[in-house]
Image 1 (tube, rainbow, N blue to C red):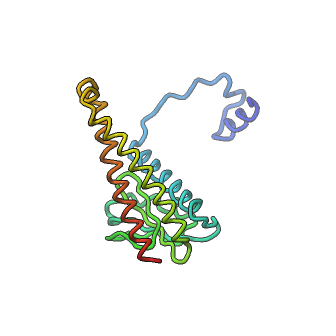
Image 2 (image 1 turned 180 degrees about the vertical axis):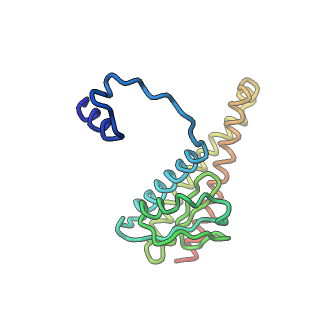
Image 3 (image 1 turned 135 degrees about the vertical axis):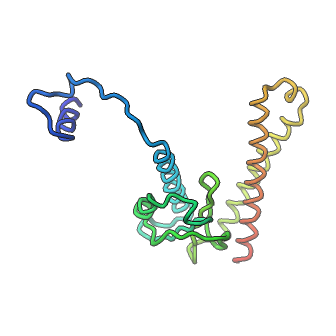
Length: 190
């Protein structure tokens, strides 16, 4: 697509006559803002998670939602919240101090997010999905525990591999706890 590339390059800024992308030097790498890139990556993950919740709960994209973030506004970079609001069709983004009941939740990094599902949720189907996910995570935890219980594996494995297995164990335990809490919440809603 050399012709399209040339046209785009010419339109990016004013060029001298005869100047072409094909004979120009490659631009040199310049400084970049690592915090901005990390913040944008977090925003991408949040948008993806909201879209996943929409898909899993069969909520159409044209229907507006509300997003709640556990924590305070001061702890977050709020400059990119309008991007989330626009791309996820949200009515508002609010910060809350406690977990929300009757809401779909997900985590990005260490931050927990909630989407209220007032009347938009089939609780029986949701509980069935959660029970299936719970069984999977219990099986995964069991396989990790077998590895860690194997003396030969523990003695011969490098330290970083053991650290990874311990992290898998703690992650699986926290997921199991979270899923069990969610099942209890949904049973209360029935």
